[in-house]
Amino acid sequence: MAKIPHRLYLSEEQIPKQWYNLRADMKEQPDPLLNPATLKPVTIDDLKPVFCEELAKQELDGTTRYIDIPEEVQEMYKVYRPSPLIRAYNLEKALDTPAKIYYKFEGNNTSGSHKLNSAIAQAYYAKKEGLTSVTTETGAGQWGTALSEACSYFGLDLTVYMVKGSYIQKPFRKAVIQTFGGNVIASPSDTTVAGRKILAENPNTTGSLGCAISEAVETATTTPNCRYVLGSVLNQVLLHQSIIGLETKIAMEMLGEYPDVVIGCAGGGSNLGGLIGPFMQDKLTGKANPRIVAVEPASCPSLTRGKYAYDFCDTGKMTPMARMYTLGSGFIPSANHAGGLRYHGMSPILSKLYHDGYMEAVSYEQTKVFEAATLFAKKETILPAPESAHAIKGAIDEALKCKETGEAKTILFGLTGTGYFDMTAYESFMNKTMTDYIPTDEDLEKGFASLPKID
Image: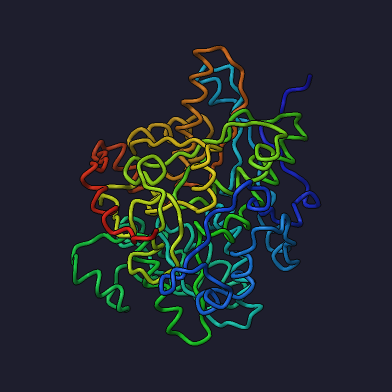
């Protein structure tokens, strides 16, 4: 049998023409988003002041299994897709494992990550609706970068509220966003009511995604012809990101392979949800039974230590409430947390799947994550984003288990992007100034105390 190639690219014609809606195959739907004023399930009319109408429809659609990708979106996908499925031969050799390790690499675009898959779609629908501007938040900066590219392409103005800790740590991300015409503001800021309130309560805060979302939503709802767009967590985002898993499954079928374990990093859930979609479909429909593993940071452990409860998606409590695994909307990761994946909650879809036992979750300290990232870079020649390195650490641990047991499992993980804008974090690791902070139960209780009381 011929050796499996290092890299497999699909042809342009094989790029999927439809997104996959995982909710259509779930035995039980995630609990609905709630209007915080009425505590009733949100409607299209509730969401239209915040989101584009077509995206609001996608957000609430739990039955349509496949949704056509608009031709304009397909054409822009072709600029950088399909992305490669890569066999990590050198990493396998270094680990001396009988396991086969594959990764889907989403860093082959200027944003350096998978985020462009949804940014293009959301910018397209905004332009189609006749809007002139959008707002958003960004943590590590990948989403803000991707959205700035998409907005530049479709001719939309963009304001990005960037978590202050990342704004300081990653100045070049800010510069790329500005290069594509985006306006970047460190969050929390004095430009919004929500930001000023947060600063009044904690002047030295490094911010959080929850803070930045509050500011972006406020700006969108008070600016004419403007809407808010989000890079993770939402059902619509996981829908757009399904392009990752759909391409991956086609490629693995071409190789005659199927993963025993599928591993993804988990912050809000966009990459993980996109990668696992068609494999979770097999699991839900009884066609196969792969293990699905979410890997999150020990500094922000929403799945492994959070509560499954209704919570606000933002710190200012302006958004609908979602039932998800959460650390509380007021939770702010430690200032020394450089590994990304900072969101206080997890996608309602993934939260439901985890709650119902279809997924596993593990967490790692950031120094162990960067150890894995450095080994991977040396062996596979790609410098991974710190977020992606969580999945790398999970894959390495699974491969080492195979070494102990002698099992030749097939491991698949998502390499969400590159780490070339994260050199401050890498320097901290190499200089041994990086430290691990794991929140205590007492720390977490402060966030849980703010959870809304819903029967």
